[in-house]
Image 1 (cartoon, rainbow, N blue to C red):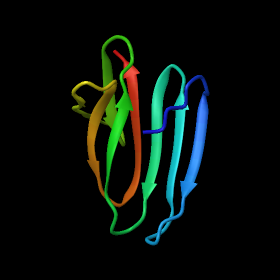
Image 2 (image 1 turned 90 degrees about the horizontal axis):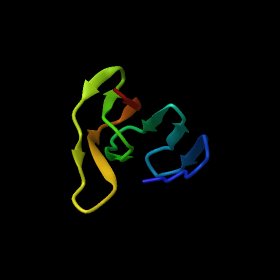
Image 3 (image 1 turned 45 degrees about the vertical axis):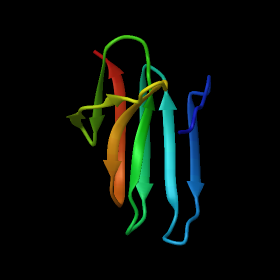
Image 4 (image 1 turned 120 degrees about the vertical axis):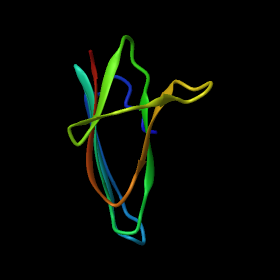
Amino acid sequence: MPQIGSLSKAEAVVPTIRGPIALAIWNGKSYTIKITLPANMSGQVFLPIINGKTVVTRNGKVISTERVPNKPFLNAGKIQSGSYTITMAGK
């Protein structure tokens, strides 16, 4: 889980044998992750816990999350190959 601290934006591309994993994170009034996974790859998405009640969306649809026991993260579920925009915003 990348932790970008006080940065407002971070981007990375990680080469793999299946193709690049692209990740961009924006940290402002909302917390947004855009991630692209190559073919035949899956991943698990974790988000930082922020103060107050939040709504999490994946590609515009509200999803449920679970707090990771004893960690300051929310589990936003598994993703498959493709591109996703995951946003966490205050209610």
